[in-house]
Length: 269
Image 1: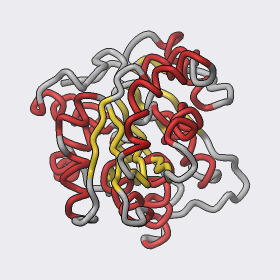
Image 2: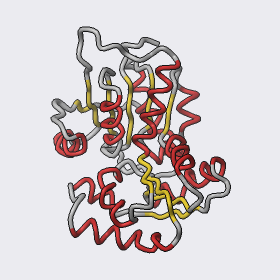
Image 3: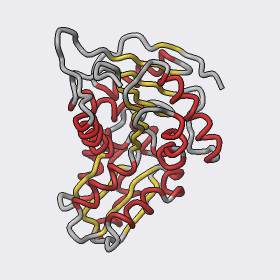
Image 4: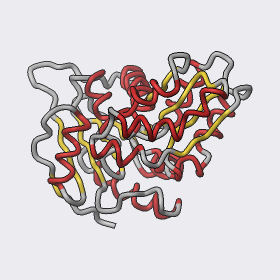
């Protein structure tokens, strides 16, 4: 592997851009290439077998760009497909669930851990299984919050509407001795301030995007693969499989910066 090679980041849509934002903030010298499989989103309604087949198509496409590491910025793929991806690629593959659960286990102070995610992620039980291994004494409360995704994509992250939605989903957690909440969907960091206001200052908010960025930094450092800035600035490519103009407008909102060209690609089966 070459330290100057890019980091590949993959998601079924735009949610993984919060992971890309965290990566580029922490590792500004790294080249990146992001792929959003917008032609097949959402993955959460698919079977595990279909999710894995789609994930392998995207991973193999990114591997052809000679990436040095694949970051799976999708909770559904992280729950179902990591072993298959790790077997298929000759590079490290990291998902978002293990790092997020590790950070939650480290931050809990003896209270309950709330897992906030999409219905598919909650139903998969992936966070629950991982946290039972890492923090076996911590009570777990899993809560599906499906409306958070469209709110994030439409840019409704502050104000009365997201606050009312968050109150409906989360108000009862204030009475459940929750001291840590895992944002188990890559869209949810955009609503982190509203979520924190509803849960209260006693609850530590764990952003899985920030957690996986720590893991990426550690892995690259241990393998001598951190890129030095040298004379060239970091390059960032963005790929999607459908509606590139819509993707770009949402991506710029998620990243807080211009995206430039979004390349439309076709994934070979």
